[in-house]
Amino acid sequence: MRACHHCHTDIDPLMSIGYNTVCPKCGKSLHSCVNCRFYSPGSYHDCSEGVEEYIEDKVEANFCDSFMLGEDTKEEAQRKADAKARAEAFFNF
Image 1 (tube, rainbow, N blue to C red):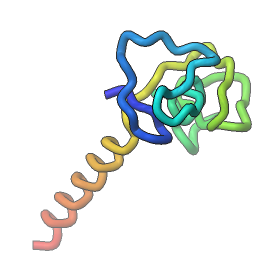
Image 2 (cartoon, rainbow, N blue to C red; image 1 turned 30 degrees about the vertical axis):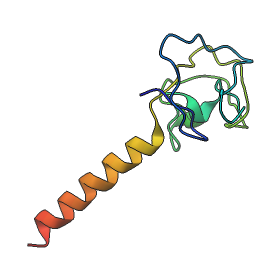
Image 3 (spheres, rainbow, N blue to C red; image 1 turned 90 degrees about the horizontal axis):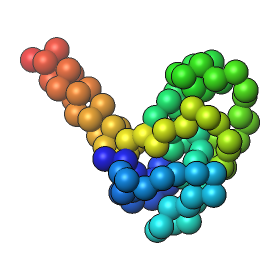
Image 4 (cartoon, rainbow, N blue to C red; image 1 turned 90 degrees about the vertical axis):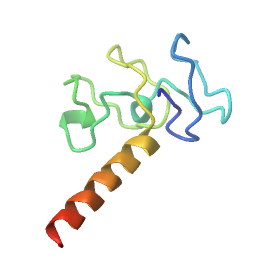
């Protein structure tokens, strides 16, 4: 589900997200690196889309043309933790 990175509020999939769009719950900008599906810390410019322009502040609104609202990072973190726990259980008999 598409959600705000800051408060994990679900965002309507039909909602158009522009530079000035903010989360209806916490008021933080939705058009920012941390909310983008291509945000990938450690990648070139922290972006898996290969953007050329470096954006220093990943939390504030930006004008990146590659922006697409990503999935809820809380759910993703939970899936990773579950997968890690299953792997550890498998190898620790």
